[in-house]
Image (cartoon, rainbow, N blue to C red):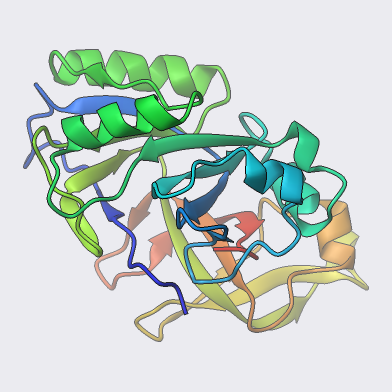
Length: 251
């Protein structure tokens, strides 16, 4: 069980939140990792990264909690997963920190702590307007990035999903559980055609795009959590045009 509950994001809704004055940073396509300050690195769902080499852990500061992402670069989530599942690929993995959890400190003070104890801290830029946010979003996604994160100035670290932290993306994303495999037809005969997935609401949705040939030959297992992206929800709450993104083994 994870010793600390982590701060999780809501989706930015432009009609509800003016981002002016909020802190803006790139949304990294990596694996969430919390450093407990006493020798262990944990995933968001409480799995310890037991393959992390002693040399990697030895660089992390004792007595200071850090919250960040294990990261290889834009669009390299699957490469990151492969690297951290073993013990030989960690030399290429960055630990990019975006917070230093402390329930009583403001975000700005926590950032100062993170920069004091760690060198690879995600840059924070004060958002000047919605136009500024959207221009930055376009630049990040054009370069292969995933999107942006917004932090409310002066906000505290809450161990739950909070509206002081917002994710900004052209596509929405969602974690779902693989419920069944649907056999392929036509060019996919003999291998996976689509993943039937269960939403947290219990509703089922079929995801048949975004899968590589290799993933169709050896698809995510029933019961595994995966991330999908989609354009919008239907009135019934079903993701429209869902696309497979990745297996969230360590999430």
